[in-house]
Image 1 (tube, one colour):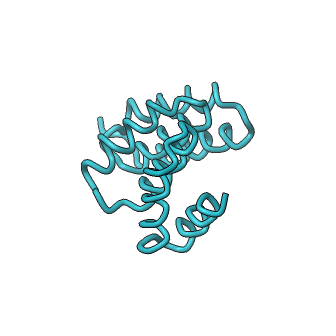
Image 2 (cartoon, one colour; image 1 turned 180 degrees about the horizontal axis):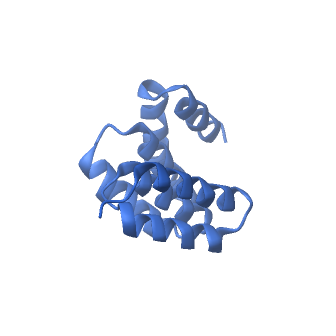
Image 3 (cartoon, rainbow, N blue to C red; image 1 turned 90 degrees about the horizontal axis):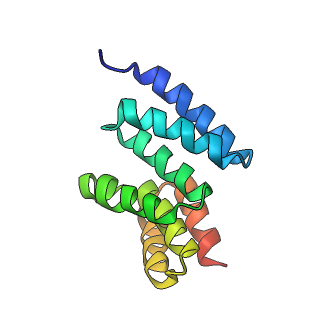
Length: 121
């Protein structure tokens, strides 16, 4: 039985909400469950990486973004933006800066806003 994409999207949103409510533990639990069901979908992988960033699991998030998402889609600007955030949190600011500059040049409006905010810090 294949997972229903809409159901996975809704459950992912619940995971994001937990994240943004500073409940990293629940967010991580939700996103790990979503990942187990829909692991081949890039939006699910992004959600798991974002939950990892909020939970302070930067190495895990970096691995997902770099070795799973960007390996499959090297021009995925959201993945590059979140990778930049995770790298910034780990103190790898030079590499993060390069990613943010690329996102500013090629990303959509939302991605550019986030990248510019990190470049200006």
